[in-house]
Image 1 (tube, rainbow, N blue to C red):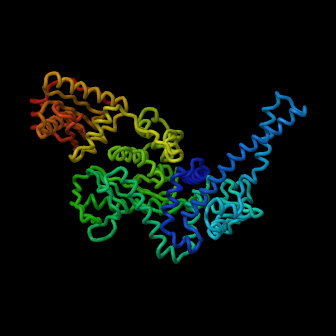
Image 2: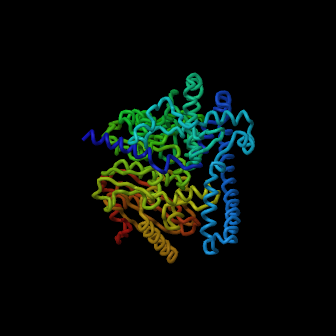
Length: 612
């Protein structure tokens, strides 16, 4: 019932708040913390006494000092333990057989017994090893340290009820340094960058005048700019537009991507999941936060989508001038909601929680993703067509007949592994599915690249080398709908991709043998999609090749009654692996004239089965 569904959402939020992975990778926290707060340097200096760059540099110097001490002291205590045990053996108080065990025991005793000296620092020591002035270091410690027993006044009940303790407000996320007897300790040093990203937000919004007049605008604008920057990793810069407007002046969306008849309407929301929402204290709070972070942006996206659909042409205004979009030529419109805050499992499949929160109607959902996850996706996805295919598969996650629990990085890993398909037989009778562990290759890549400074190979979707060549060649064409052709090829699983490549190779080989025209065609399951390939020698006449490909594809599409068809062509006298790609998409209608042409011109032959 409804109560059970609401309880499930609360449990989901509670579990997410304890999730080990965290909201992002460490290097992202450092980068975003710097970039988002650096634009407020003047306010930081006046109100906190340091800039975000100062805070990050001081913290890095503390980490470096800790590492130096740990390594130096470890070696020092090993030497001391060796000397001490040597004396014991000489004095007959220990035997040679006991040497190794004694050296380990004595070394550990002294090393860990002296941990307060190794892991603590004074103000003077901080000034010395950080290189910053006394004033800056004092202000840094004043803002970021706490005495034992410190409590935030907004959370007076912290650590009173042991059953609720895992979800109590943790003051280390506000002040990660502990002060005691004029010494300073950092209990969990890995928290620093996460703290810096979040804690200063509350300092800024507490200054209501600054936040409302300057701060909030900078904060939101940065998220939009960063989103556009990430999307430019995938799409040509000339196809990504920041803050486009409707014809007449009102903003259309935060970021717009126009790529080969495919449109991404992107809305960005800096709304954070409130603490009480994060720990699952109240389902209404969760609903309100999701409404502001995702639903409102989705509504704005729907208005923009409808504008494209209902206006012919759709006129939009961008910094570079005016653009007219032929609405009849649009292949797909994707609605993307980007959040600055992390909403883990709550937004990776909104259909999981919608029965309880009731925000979305008609089973329509956006692709909701955090900025951090968008950064990972755009770092690893290799091309516009693959990104569009991934977007299609991500939106299909919302349409599964069962709940799916997974974060974005696991979904991306599953996409690389098997294409993110849940329509297969193995998932047929499921009520719910949890994905975990599919991010291992991605985690390893991110760690080696961003933490170790290596140049590891990116995790990739599995595909035969020649298949990748076809995708690359098709995406390099100047023709329209090339992306639709590539996206449909991505629909093939690995085995079918191999069969496709082999069929193309055989067809090419026949043309090389007799210099004649050869072809193959195949139809996918349920006649939803068909492919055809023609090889012949046109001596570089691509218009003639295009005509042959178009005629053959049109006739094959008609005969097979497919909804969509991809036609490919190759000139044996050229240097490309494929020279022409066309995409046909329209409902089948009976046409006696085309039927007669097909009957007269299509040679009888066996349809090649490469489908899955």
